[in-house]
Image (cartoon, rainbow, N blue to C red):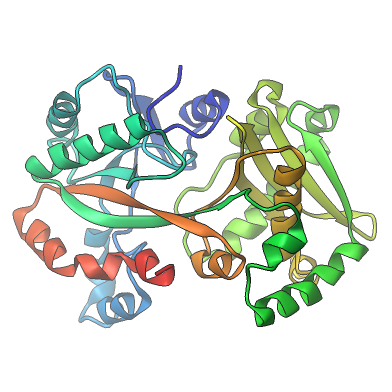
Length: 349
């Protein structure tokens, strides 16, 4: 089965449904689209200035739980976009989402709908536009979502790619990329024998946790069973780029090759070695080299760190969230404050 807006392999979507993130509940709706529920901090995507102002309000610690409601999300946290189906007309799907979820949950978010994405077909983009319009007609509020970074593989070499950047950026990147000479880099595949070793699985999961724990946004904590299934599933067609220093694994990227696109999904690192060796920047160019060597059409680099990815030459396509707030007072307040939740648009402008 292929969903509308799907970039990832089916195996990854199925894994999310079987092993949702910690304290999440996931399911397949009657319309055949994935959804999940979780406690959601409404300030997660707000700009820092707005967060600080809210935190300084009187008695914030006593009422902050009001800003962390149980929320229903239509979508997944493992797909770049909301996964929809053309088996249901857009207006009917919008009716079903509102009828099914808005009475049960105080907040409902149809997350990560594409906005004229160059990574999707004309038909996918058209259906997403229709569902956005239909949800807005039914009282959902449109909020600018995250910026998805991607790089078209329209260059003949890494030097050709670097030539598109400014002189100062090229100089800075060449300096950082010198650390690549100190690393041993390999490419493994999901389902390889090494991913059936418990010690190895523990190590890979710990490196993922290292990155999660130092991230500014803590939302979806993937579980150990999810990671085991992810690494052991040969059919998922995953590529694991590993980086060893002094005989020890200090980082990896888990990517997938689907429809001639390299999709970067998960990273794990050991600190401070990964920072000292500029592993983030090295891995970016290793992924680009792989996509180039395999004659892939593009590299999809995910949502996080848009400013850094912009400096590395990424292009961006924005997403939209459609949000329904049952409480009319809160709904009116959000409409006034939408701009504080649309920071990615400014970062990649």
